[in-house]
Image (tube, rainbow, N blue to C red; front, side, top):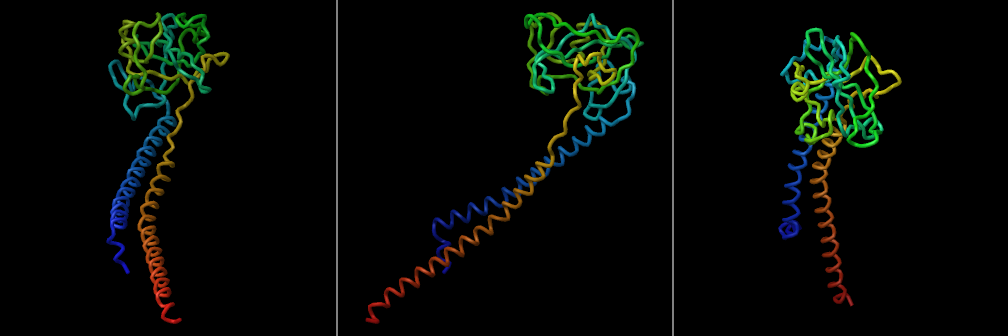
Length: 264
């Protein structure tokens, strides 16, 4: 009755099933690992966004690389903006997907150190791509700003190529070391994404808070792969039982056909 399991077709089918089961189980564990990673990152971001603002000097300094734990932490700085030395960051989009610039303005602290402040997004509506856009002025005089601390941008992390030979006061990446050389000043590592004070007239457009990764999707995929792995042996048994039934019915039919002439 079970000799058909030794046929070439069934041997191949059984080997494929035996290969699929551990593969699907492994894929389920991989998706669960991704779920745990994303959940941990989401928690890290959530904690940072909800953190109590601290002076920026507590978390960064010239030459410092902002760590993953420090990213998105709320910081404050007191000093004055220097709009005459600000630059714009090219090819940045707003919440609606429109391409424009980010406005990066040096902010000088009382001790002379500089914090790079990303004041937000403006549209690229200048007469030409090379013209420096018209930018609303920041608050004048001594000001206290609050924002989210961010690490320096790199091509490896962002995928943005650091194009050379750009028009004056236009850059591709926000990098404190490069800006320190341009400004001839001590620039603290990373930069600050402005939260307050809000700009008059809503421009530059403040950059929204980061979204959370969809970790629940990875959890669902893990369960899905494990269900698939459980379905493989069930499917194999169903197919084998159907094969047995069909072979038994065929054998009974052949026996009945052979018996008919003898009964006449």
